[in-house]
Amino acid sequence: MRGTLTHLVTIEQYQETGETVDDGAGGTIPVEEWVAVVDNEPCRYEPAGKGYVREDQGGRVYSSPRIYLPARTAGHMGPNSEFVLDIDEGDDWRLRLASVDGEFAIRSVDVHYSGPQQPSHVLVELEDVEPEGSS
Picture 1 (cartoon, rainbow, N blue to C red):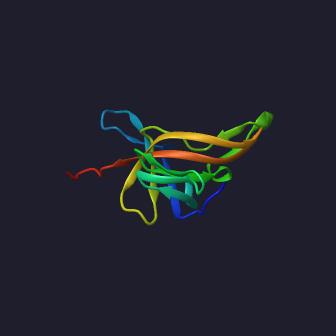
Picture 2 (cartoon, one colour; picture 1 turned 135 degrees about the horizontal axis):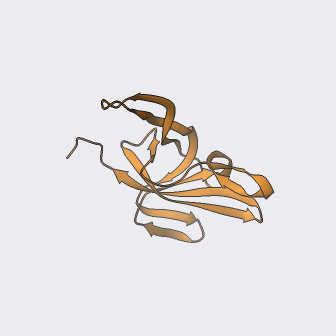
Picture 3 (cartoon, rainbow, N blue to C red; picture 1 turned 90 degrees about the vertical axis):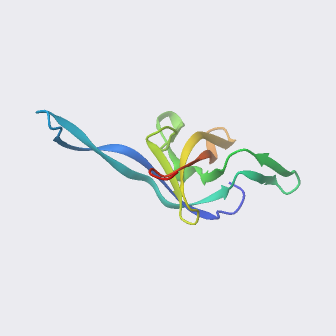
């Protein structure tokens, strides 16, 4: 992965804990909580607007913020030498950057390769999320 790792990222998934609580109607419901899948790892952050692909190519305008993660941070090599992501997009995923206020939803996750079966980095496109209770 080229470029400087500029920020620390935490990516969490809303998961069942294995415990249950009384639902008040004679049954039980599973307890869910946010669990860190990527915890305080270095990444490169580009806010919405202009980002630079390479010095010789100049700037490109992006409509949403994005981060670049080293491949080993976002996944692992699985059976048959396939790269398996440990992160995903959806409502049960959220992302926080240590030096940026707010919280982000993950819009898309894209693995980039430097060669066959050689993942170099993972590009994660973000969406700003307004905290609950704010207007």
